[in-house]
Image 1 (cartoon, rainbow, N blue to C red):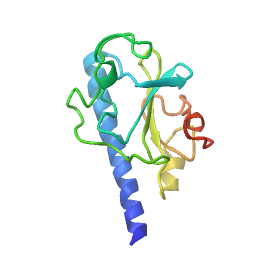
Image 2: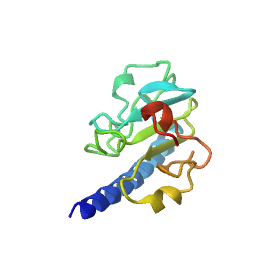
Image 3: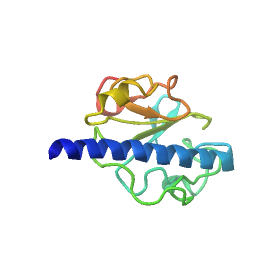
Image 4: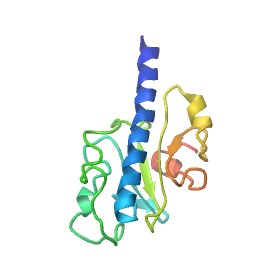
Length: 152
């Protein structure tokens, strides 16, 4: 039974990523920018982690410009109502990680799948031990090692 649960969680993660990718395209179509990340420290990229209802909502930057988000909009895909409800899990290493370039034109979102190694190896991304999605997939290197100490 636990094997079926693991498979179901991986299927849900992949479905979440498709929903997020669609939401990102809608957001970009409206603003010509991707949402800001809430954290920094990944070179010029900002990031956001899943597990809380605030994932990708822009909540801590809605008051105006910041180092991580110098240009409006200061909202995210959740505050815009494109995605509703919590996305992803709280516990690393299965948390979803969103990284966005400083000009907000390129992003990746990634996570570790529990059992679907083929999906991680064949997603077109740079890391064979992560499932990656986004317009930066394949040339924007996930900074997973800095975040959780696991090599890409």
